[in-house]
Image (cartoon, rainbow, N blue to C red; front, side):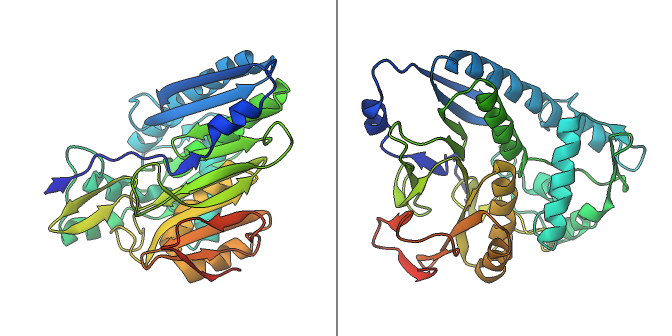
Length: 346
């Protein structure tokens, strides 16, 4: 088995050096790179309150990680999983909101997003030393525990209850999006006019360039090397989240197995899509939709995107075709790698 330990940032900040060169020399810039939530996080805040805002942001990330991480034994999510089929667990407002939003998108996507996929993910263990292709009977058994409809919320008591003992949830498909939105609240609290948040590929652009122009963002080429992009997107005060089959995967007998599981089959999603980029006001929406549309495929995924206000998408298929939603056009997106062609949306 040939293994790849690949953790790539799906969205690239393009031409940062040009941006910095355009800044007023008196404008203060505060930057912080840390490894948290299982990924490299980069924060870049501008203005006199940037330092305080970054300090509070790091503390907020740590707080959310301690609540939602499966790698922290006493996290609230681990407590919820350990008490599956036993009793409801009182959780923080953070966890309750994220689970609630996950169930909303589970319903909206027809189950394409399902945070109860954890038993299946654990079988595959993609990205770990134990990654493997499970036997079909193992997958079928694990799928019996996967159903977001068996997650019970009690808003009066702020509790989460998994109805079946074999269930387990994983908020990895949505937690970073929620975190990015919380950091934006901190930026507003400290009146930070411009900032760049990159949570391992979950990007939020707060403001634009100093001259009030949108920022150019390079979208990772799903077939290229890290840092190579196939198109450039102009954004301002938006979240940009990308999911792709190149982020975490391994190859067995010449076949690639990536980490985005189809909750209906228990196998990595295979429908022709290799990359989904969601542009939205709220990063939690982008996070949930980047995963769910990847599983839904081009037609159903684009139908879902076009039914939601203030959300857009860029899909890439394995035959190098690019599909865009109705809000993406020549004024805000351009394909720079001519190996890719527009199929529709232009």
